[in-house]
Image (cartoon, rainbow, N blue to C red):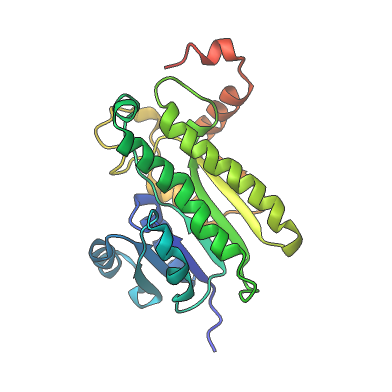
Length: 242
């Protein structure tokens, strides 16, 4: 009988998710990697994961809400650990004029997460569930004029996870939120972000894989400082930020 833990990676084609898949497998775990682009995921696993046979690839669309129950019920094994890493970005100026793009961010970062995670955590037939991890962003810490639409979707996701943590406390299921700064990824390519603040996907992935008991995890010393500055600064100061 298999004894390795099973990780369900939702939104598995993100750069952080791919790095986390590698690290989970290297720790001896098996991963169910779920994404819309299964061909790209299959290519990545075959060339980059040390033991590709430990990765099962499935189709998952974060915004196909009506299909989430069927997806979960059809999993080959129910997970010990669930990571929600799905992401979508539309720049703020464009999002204010493009409702479809803004709505997509809301659905991917919040509605899709709530839909599938509610199904997972209310499954009374999976007693081995032990951890839920969500990838959020420092953009959701305080509203700022440069990215408040994207940031609001991440803020909503973080608040959902905070309540979920309390809801699952009696069951002993841990919930973590990774509050990340700028990540060098395909989603941020071309945005002209400060090079000195960029973090590698593998660095964020390590925070995911090594998540402990703390709810909020902010990878990187510089970003920890920025997190607390944003949290504690008066509104008059935050309003002057870009």
